[in-house]
Image (cartoon, rainbow, N blue to C red; front, top):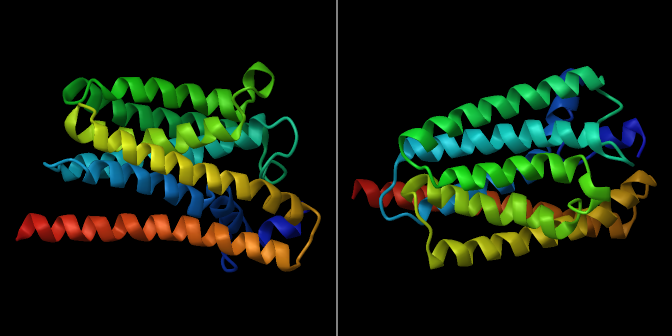
Length: 236
């Protein structure tokens, strides 16, 4: 994909300075939004809600995935480097380290103070940041299954554990559903990106783009609706 094509991605704003547009593109906001929505949905499964923890898990995953993992992907990809041509390696490394450190600093506070079980999720997610994005073990972890586990299933469990310091059947079932939805998203995203790299602009590209928009935006909207419902229930 040439630089002009990358800037024409549907999730990249058409307004503002070039550096702003590039940075927003790096965040892959619709897909980061999906992952963050899973943490919210997992949180909402708890009977008793701690809203500060909802906010904290949202910030943690926004930093860890939205910034750090995507910066790592641009650094570590062995083939196509998403947005890697727009940033210096030093800048990407700085983004990755600072954002990941901040997310773990917040997470550590809650692990030590309230939810020690979250440490298991934190260790797993930290592993996948490097194993997936830097294609460790000859790319063994850079596969659709591991993507759907790390950024689909685990965020649901992280949200629930953040609230309850426990696990249950319902969050496990919802995490499986989220993992499946993430699998569908990444499965469709790969051929879509291949077509975009070839500067194709036919019916196939538009169809795949519509599916991706539907999956990501529906997930985000669902999380927002669930939050509103829980807030109304809380204040009744």
